[in-house]
Image 1: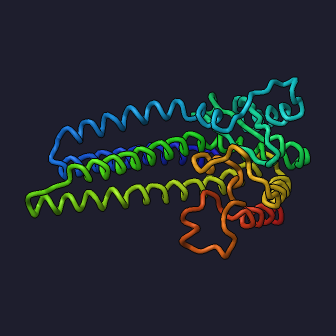
Image 2: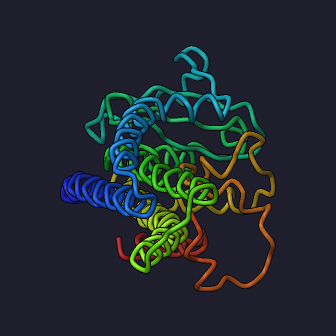
Image 3: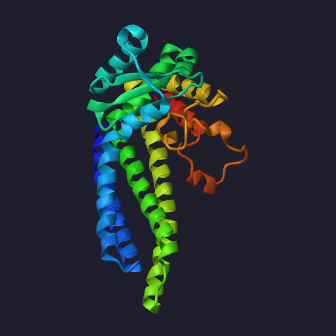
Length: 298
């Protein structure tokens, strides 16, 4: 577990470096295409300001979008005990607890790091899960906190957002001022258009890939905390079988939840390799199968 935490921290630094290079590279190509050095400086400055503000406000924005409300220990002593006990087991500060008044069962964790972490559950989750199942779900979310997934995925979302915004701004500006008088200028301009179209797509695919991998990791780490794979496996079965979708769920926050809150709004049909690239979560059935194999080999 500690090896994975260290690995996630290193991955975060590597990811930041890669995206910084991508963002600077995009701004440089866009500046050449528009024949304006100012585009490079303004683009980089915008990216820095956006990244810093979004990184520090992301958790609060997610809670506001979800209409989550904080609770105190007296409001739900049983839930508080589960969170506090698992925090002690994981060697983490006890996160703040928020509740969404929604019959659709689901949960997520957010925040920049363990000291600023929040675990949020819906009222529907509390109603349908047993104590051991709830422990499995909370352990999963605690694992996201302990593995620094909350920081990693916040960075991913912010950086992908910057790439998408820069590409969108360039395409809009190029419609107004996209003329080129030379073959070299035309080639650069076409390259810039291609990058503006392709780079956001690549960034989104990477974001979803990171999200899926961290769900598997959080499931495994949760088992280390509870020593009972069936608790989480049974909880996932109930969540997957439930047909309700959280009222406040949207595509911006989908990757945070323990199961995809919008899964019931998608068209039914056989999954394909291509559609799998754009899935924020691995197959719930696959996750359950892996968990029960852990129990078999325990």
